[in-house]
Image (cartoon, rainbow, N blue to C red; front, side, top):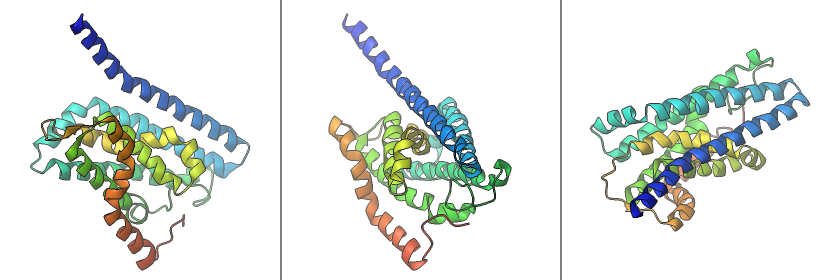
Length: 253
């Protein structure tokens, strides 16, 4: 009986992530449906923006997420064979995935003419220039967050799926600084977008590292802890970009 209860408990734990992913994806579909209804009553720029969002969802969340999950064991074997500290590999791998995600978003923005509008009339990135986006708007501020998570994972043993969810929630917080309404409305989508940057890197972390099992309160504190740990790097980066370089914070085309 004890063995049977243990097996049943393990099955429930293993099926929980699948249930959460399905709920989140249903949220993504509902969000896109709502945006479509709004866009149809608005105009061509709004319709084009929805098409860009759909392109991002298909390429990054659906295709990218499926590839990451399907080849996760092969990727882990390769990453663990590299002669670097796992923390360095985690940060570099997450940064590479973030660069790929931003490559997709910039591609969608540059497809504006194909979606029936002029460049700059509809967009999902701050610029149509890839280097501008990653160096001055997005990935440059993601890296300190990745470093913070490498530090946290060296102390606490969060599962890869937990990292996926928690960094996804962290992404929602980041998006709220740009558009609170958009962050809340697209919360399911943002969890996928940000979470997929760190899921596979977290999956590749060695199991035998000396990390404590995360308690329930660690899950509550990890998001503010992420920003707290990242601040010594994050604040100088933001200051340098906005004050020294005086790079425009908003969209510019």
